[in-house]
Structure formats: C-alpha cells, structure tokens
Image (tube, rainbow, N blue to C red):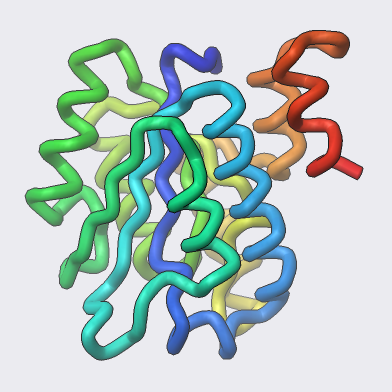
Length: 185
C-alpha cells in the first residue's frame, strides 16, 4: 500500500447510528486519525451518509475534520447499503481507479451491513480492501467480531488503524511523520 494507490472511504458515521455502536469512541477517534492521515498525505477521501434525512448527518467530530482537510474529498449520500452500488460513489471511485488508486482503506459503521457489503463489492470489482478494524463498528460486539473473521477469510486485509498509518508513513523523521505525531500519542 502506497499513498499514490490509496483512497480512504468513511462509511456512515452518522448522528442517529453512532449512539448504538459498540466501542463508538474508538470508531470516531480512529476515523479522525485516518482523515488526518489523508490530509497530511493528500489521499482522496470519500465520506458516505446513509439516508441522512432519516439518520442524520455525519457526527460533528468526523464532519469537522472532513471539512478541514485539504486532500481531495467527496461526500456521497446513499440509500444502498453497499457504497459501491450507489452511482455517485462508483463514479468517483472509478475516476480514482483510473489514476491507479486501487487500494481502498475502509472504516465506518455498521461493520456487518454497509461496511461488509461495500468491502465485498469492492473486492469483486478488483480493488484491494484494507479494513481499519478499530475505526469500524457494529451495534453488537458479536456481529462485529464475526464479520471481521468472515472478511479476513474472504481476502479483506483487516488491520488496526495504526498499521495503516505507519505503513503509509513508511519512516520516522519525515515532514508527514512529524505532522501526524500529535495524533498518534
């Protein structure tokens, strides 16, 4: 995974969904770290919202950082569970794919519904999918654990957020590393 090959996809971290999510604080904190990394490394971001009229907008902690970043960014409203089946999402991701961005770092909620369906569809479309496990959640811990095992068995790379961050940073002492350091403490 290299910065030139990655797109970050943040799935449905919304006002009416988040309160019921097991380990929601970690999901928000680590999603924000990934957004900060995207900003520092100029990695494109696609943020989705499932039926925001009914489920609310992206929670403030995530939305604020999304708005602040200078990296290319796109907000996509959807009604499909899989982001990949939403035409607006597919068009944006396809354009990045044509630029050689075939690695998708995925995070968000719910792991066993929208994140799962998105991961499977992206794999089928030929993308490499890297799931940031601690930036992803479900209402029930059992659903979360089970789907991570299932995704791993299907070839999705399931790793902690810091693994993604340090793999993309590659080395200490760089300007990017110094800019990310405050978010890693």
